[in-house]
Amino acid sequence: MQRLVAENLVYRVSGRGTFVAEPPTRRRAENLVRFSEEMRRQGRKHSSTLISAELRPATDQEANRLILPNPATVVEIRRVRLADGIPTVLETAVFPSELSELLRVDFARDSVHATLIALGRTPTRGHSSIRAAVADEAEADLLDVSPGTALLTEVRLITDQHDQPLELTESRYVGDRYALDVAFEVDSSADSTP
Image (cartoon, rainbow, N blue to C red; front, top):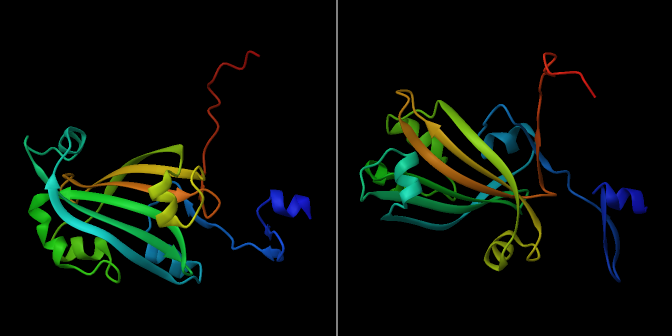
């Protein structure tokens, strides 16, 4: 039983028993598939809880990554994405302010990328960096975990069909509820000296 707990296949609740754990959501690292589409492919129900949607001043980093004039404003959309009703990821996405039409959309039910396409900006390519983090108290509350819970943090920049910066997003995934599958090739040209 301890091995099943260690492999996150079951979990224990003191005084109640041992229960089968939900399998983590998985995504191949070389592809970005909309969260809603990921859930459909896995036969899971997706939903979102909108935390905030606002026009605000851009940080220096946001202005640089989105290639905006300084001072600049951005549209920020912050929401919790759920898989089968379980909070899985806290997502904060920022867009250039000319996409302020995004503030009129109900992102609790509508897709950001489908909306961007309807506005004439098709998400096409991107780059992301991934690191480990832990949930602070506010994040833990939104994700229904304990403060200090392991998070997988992905920061990605997506460009449109004209190779213009479109979206800068930080996604904070609950570590035991989400996984990235990575396919790779082994560099055979590396020095084989021990």
